[in-house]
Image (cartoon, rainbow, N blue to C red; front, side, top):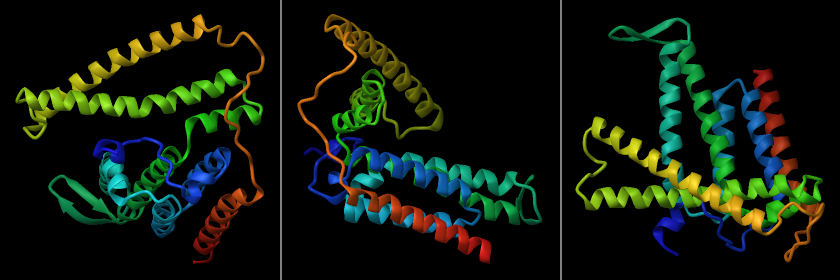
Length: 259
């Protein structure tokens, strides 16, 4: 496996516990994690959940730290920017002054909360992508009563994510070969990202048109039901992931209220 595949948003079977879990259980786990993060009122709770999801990814998912950092660094940077913004934007008692800007006590408290909300939700979503075959997720959605057209739309969305990342890497490599390195000034890097977005948009429209034509030629959606070569099965012990997350989130919320 190449380094780009190891660091990308690509499903890889590693014979791990997370790989064997029922796809809908992992999807529900992501929603439970997100709900808990928006109920937390302390950055400590967000930090605990961040560490929990990270350990789950490395131990239960056997995902290398290099892959986690390689795929999450942009989101972590956005989370840090969001945290710094709240340092100055939230009202409260002034603590420090940096020119015309003032850091408040409430901003120092709320900033990490928003950082963990963004970072943990994205990290949990990445764990779902890394450990779940999109075909298995589509089959499990149809078993849950979702029309197979809607399930296939989810399949396509997850299928295109690694393709988009590969296109970005290809465009970046092409610019580097031509001497237009992204390590130059901010203005030049902004122009490069404009080119990336334009290229990705055009290629995305082409893929969407090709996929739509292919589905129409194969009469996709003609019959109310479909059969699948590979089936997925639910096991009651899969619910331990959800139960454990609910217990952890409830304990964190009760601990916050008790303080």
